[in-house]
Length: 328
Image (cartoon, rainbow, N blue to C red; front, top):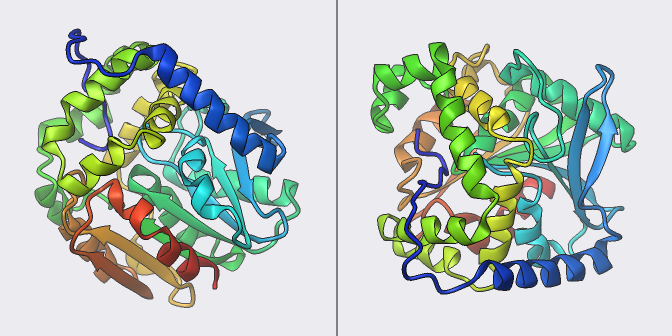
């Protein structure tokens, strides 16, 4: 499943930025964000089952709460890449680490429908009653799960370049064969090995940069522009590295969850809840055809397709549209 995986390479040729330069730029940007947001990037709460749930918070603490569910594999630090665009808006942006990634403890036998319960506990701890949710790429199944399970707490749900349930139709659209599904479901140890190797690479930002730039040619031009941005690149590398703070177990568990039945039908999402779907027509990671199928299955779904955007560029080029839809 090609949903934001860095390919491991040994070559370091054509390297333009050293790890020290990346870290220096990252630390400078972190310091700027911390000054404006009271250093709320590394927070945890203790859940009822004893696990820690990690999250970052930026924006207006008195604004409309919006929970962000990161891509795959990624972390709560995705919020940093959006911080400049969120500053000044009446939005309380809360980005949450999934179990086994970032600051959130691993949870054995985790299911997709376990996630809404974690979000309810977090919302209650933060004294938040109603809130919006959105998920980007591999985070979209988690926002959809919230739409299904806790619609009474949600004011709107966003799906951004999102992965859908692996129905027969969607499997054909993203070209996933039965062998890949079998491995993810029944031989997840293989994914654990892959994620473990990627986790080792993720500790070296220098190597991550080489891997990322090596794969840029496979992406459409709008995505290449975003991933080559001198300010975004250090943040992009760091938030990806943070996903493997605890190793690769959390990411491999995500892959298994994606491959399994979700435990509900999209058609059963409450028609009273407004769902907004955003997808780039140039997306080479999750084809726009997946978004069209998902949109048809959800009862009250408003879909917007952007002809000149890919998987990564859409969020940055159209964040204002997304935030307005989810919080107005």
